[in-house]
Length: 281
Image (spheres, one colour):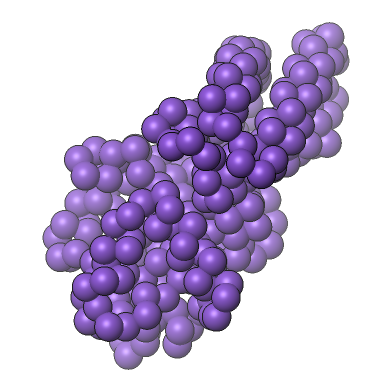
């Protein structure tokens, strides 16, 4: 993509925490910052990504089916340490170019969800690379652009809402079978929600409770909400993990999860954001 178009997408992405308009509206896009192989300068590029179970995400170096790999791919093969912005979090990651059967399986999943990837491959003689980006642990998550702890919590919640909306849309538009990539999308969401709530139970709620003991009953109610959501997540995981899972059975479970989760997120935002906004970051 031309640099001026890229910059427009980057600016909109950062201004709206990953939400884009136009041709990328409703897509899974991240910002990938690599180190120039020749210049050593930082270069940021918007790229589409695939969830891959929560431990990593996958990006595809299609360049629209051009005869050569995109510059960002050459950069990360020279310097695999990259920075990822997903609309909520900014984190360092290690890039690994997938090979052999692992690459082929990942690309096949991508094609199943979007035949456009196959069209790009058909336009070029090169084998289009698939790259895994694995987060490097380096302290607490960095919520991009958060101005307060409360703003950070709202950003995380909105990211969850957005992903749930994408999955609901994908399931509604899917064919007779759930499909491998859509199954992974669902399982990745389940794992992310579990980790988010585990972190709140272990750190955020005790932190607030130690400073506001009068909120003990409220925090206990939120823990109980976590337990109800965990039960819905377990049922969803079981359903989508079944071979040949029927989207017609999965969608109602996602809708129930969405309803229960939205009530919980609103409850947390109403009770906790004023307290967190008053705390220094």
